[in-house]
Amino acid sequence: MINLFEIEVHQTTFAPVIETDIIIIGAGPTGLFAIFEAGLLKLKCHLIDYLPQPGGQLAEIYPKKPIYDIPGFPSILAGELVDNLMEQVKPFNPGFTLGERAESIEKTDDGQFIVTTNRGTAHKAPNILIAGGLGCFAPRKPELANLERFEDHGVDYIIKEPEKFRDKKVVIAGGGDSALDWSIFLADVASEVTLVHRRTSFRGALDSVEKVETLVATGKMTLITEAQISALEGGDELDKITVTENNGTVTEIDSDYFIPLFGLSPKLGPIKEWGLDLGKEAILVDTKDYQTNVPGIFAIGDINQYEGKLKLILCGFHEATLAIQSCYKRIFPDKKLVLKYTTVMGAPGS
Image (cartoon, rainbow, N blue to C red; front, side, top):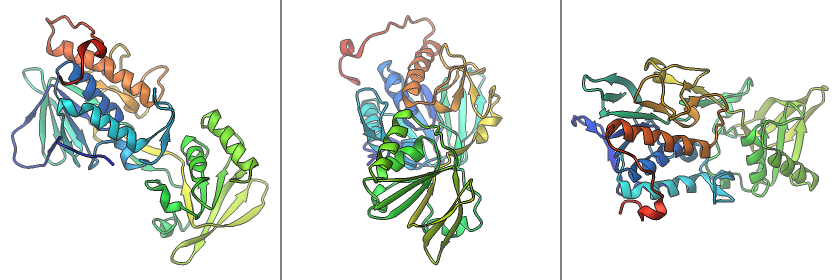
């Protein structure tokens, strides 16, 4: 579990402005790794996040979901990755303002920025890194008449604790990575797993599709394609799901849980008011250093947009590294920045 150890967590009071070298808006994996890169250059960071703990979606939505594309880790749970990132930045003593949303950005006469939260907490720095992931988000919900009735009574949009589904009958709907990954994972947890997808092709990784096909072939999972969930039934708790196929076939499935995984509906929220050039619900950046149209404001991770963009954590790490280099040059324009490998520099924070 995430341990806030000795990090400085700001609580809203009538405190003076918090001053730092870099304000990072968003405490997900990309924002956390940016602390490490800044720390190597002796730069101080303070993070703002609307969630009550660091880690972003990894901590809040799917801490038990396995991630397979982090270099050096054949597989790592999302929550464990956050724990590791927090341990990695511990020597650099970052500050955190948690449970507050970055509301406004103002430029000062001396060329710095003031970021104020929805609770009035003010932060000042010459650089801002926006690492807000998808921004404010909510799960996309299927259009079912009595869906809300069963929310928290058999309908879940987020899987925080897989053990909840131990020996239960689970129906998952969706065709992307999350639907595939959780179907694979829960096949060894639930007594029955049924994956329903409206098409025969999937949007997820080919390797995951192959794993699902293998599980279906061995009888560990049921797959229904070209179909949709058409009805939910039950008393106080969900107990039956109706699936309607495109050919008109109707099937009733006994189920303890229905998990629709159709992705998240992102909303930029206050970011739209910050004078930044926006693409399709994302911030446009220069790939030289992932700076926005406003000098000193950078956007890294899923929140940015550029030609060839891939929304992967490891890509966010790369973007954070280059952005931090430019932050240093903005603070110390007359100093020559020489790249030093950590193997030469010694232990971080030493």
